[in-house]
Amino acid sequence: MVEYKLFINGKWVKASSGKTFHRVNPANPKEILGTFQAAGKEDINAAVDAAADAFPKWSSFPAPRRGEILLKIAHLLRENKESLARAMTEEMGKVLVEARGDVQEAIDVAEYMAGEGRRLFGYTTPSELPNKFCMTVRRPIGVIACITPWNFPMAIPAWKIMAALISGNTVIYKPSSDTPRCAVKLVEIMDKAGVPKGVINLVIGQGVEVGDHLVTHKTIRGISFTGHRDTGKHIIGIAGLKRVSLELGSKNALVIMPDADLDLAVDGILWGAFGTTGQRCTAASRVIVHKSLKKKLEKLLLERTKKLKLGSGLSPKTDIGPLINEAAQKKVHSYTEIGLKEGAKLLCGGRKPSLPGYFYEPTIFTDATPHMRIMQEEIFGPTTSIVAVEDINEAIEITNNVDYGLVSSIYTQNIANAFKAIEKCETGITYVNASTIGAEVHLPFGGVKQSGNGHREGGIEGIYEFTETKTVYIDYSGKLQKAQIDITTIKQ
Ligand code: UN1
Image (cartoon, rainbow, N blue to C red; front, side, top):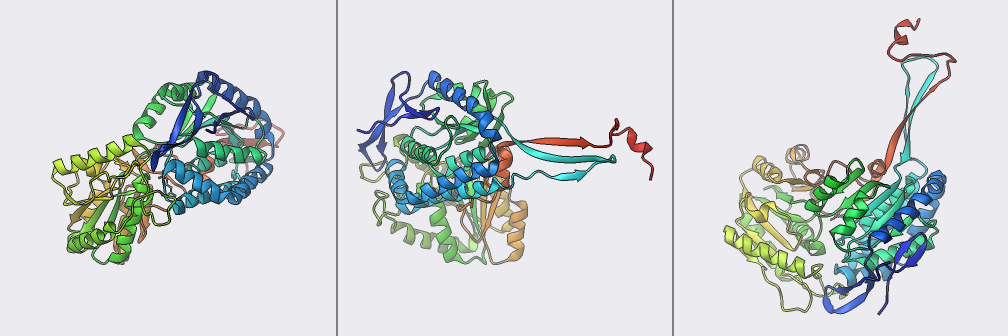
């Protein structure tokens, strides 16, 4: 059995408590993938100290030079793409083509952020006084905790870590304990690429106590978290005045208008609802269809869903891999029971198949109503629910009738409907004639309402997440000039 370690101050080390845990293959839980260290408070303290020591040098290292290291990371990720993707499928369950996409997203963001090293733009603006120059510059925040989920084990950590590093911060990376091996592999590559010691530290821990210790550690200046809404609320509750950026849950809607290309919409639903076994914060977990198309849509969806094959993501025949663990399987099934109790009609699915792993049949409810729990709560599994509407206004009203606001999608050939959705859907992202998933790394990613706390990852806004703005005034008049006071004495 391979034993994987923590990465602290440039060295692979065991947890100081000696505690370890195992991770299994979710498609075949009898297969143990390795032994992992369960970090405790001492390990976190050591990692934070190392990151704090490394900060002065790393933050003074020119950003374009930091970018060269990021490019090296991208290069090594590309070179190892296939083996990383396979390892990801074994550990997380998503089908191989999607695992390749996950690694590709990490490559893309490393390349994009490498380029940001030559930008990190501030701006200049005139002063209200003569002989005075005004500008802004971006400064790193300090030691950042990047706390990441298991559903995108390479892409999401890369979104955060690459942006944090190019901005000059040092990082404590705490991945989900469901995907520790992917985290080790990502950090191995970063080490190989020449990230200096202490700049990236990996602590893999289990339990609230370890997470709380990291979040409340006085040296941690910023926290970037992607995961469950309740954990996000907890973090922001205990983090005090640290910079906290949260990417949380969602309940995304895919709207189909009478003028839509229905086959295209069906493709979008299958990809949005069942891609990554529905375990995306961008999943299409609600389908809002114009009443005139409901019957036809149900028929098409049923035909196509029946053909989807469950199995190991390593098999090219598989369409849908397993859920992440047994608890997820139980949760998804409990929502089938909730939906039935609430009076929704099961079009297909709703069962655990007789396979050894944590699989769940692709499940479609119809005749749902907007207030049902299956239409309000994040299920994070291969379950979606159909509701019929009279018109675009009702469709938008239902889209917005949830606590969350990450993604909306509309299928229509009518430009007025498309623009109405863009304007009125309360979401951070709106797709027109495309499914709810497919974010690109150079555009901002994030949601409104309870899907986050206003930050965006990706693109230039991903840099804002990890930098402070410093305002600079340079007075070259050689005399004391008083803003707001001397302005009245300036002669024309
Ligand atoms: C997530 O589900 O947490 O757009 C992120 C997408 C991916 C990112 C999803 N590129 O679905």
